[in-house]
Amino acid sequence: MRKRSERFALVDNISPDERNLTAAYTDFEKVRDLSHGRCLSLAEWTELLGRVGLIIEHSEYMDQDIEFGPWVQRMRCVDSTVARLKAMLADEPLARHQLFHSPHCGMHQLFQGPQSCADAGVEPDAAASKKPAKASAAI
Image (cartoon, rainbow, N blue to C red; front, side, top):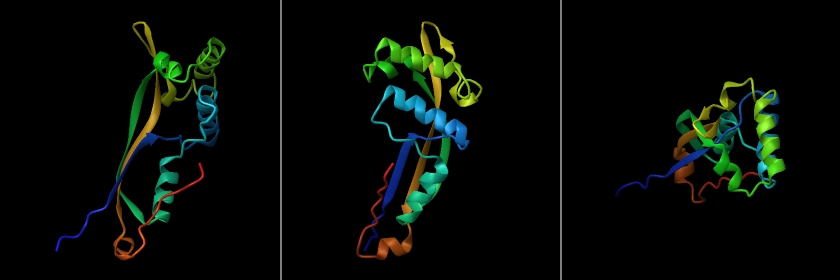
């Protein structure tokens, strides 16, 4: 009899580890998307997944180039919101942090946001239990 393999993969934006930068990043995201809660850090994801019986076997940090125009257009941001977001990228603390540098690539403005991917497996004890582990959190 073959054992069932249970995997959980996560790719998501993550918050930086610095508190003041995390707050600024959350504010930045909320200006564009009022429904945005907050991004978790990789440490917070690790702790949350561990609480439901998952062990992160591999994780990596990636820079994600985000084209600014389509990013604001997806949320139908008005001109004043777009201007505010550009100002936030150019101001402290986002401007000084390497994660949020804003290079210009031809006619397209880009910014880089932190992202992580994680691969997790079920702890042996959790896999043997009758109730499957559920991941849930108020974010």
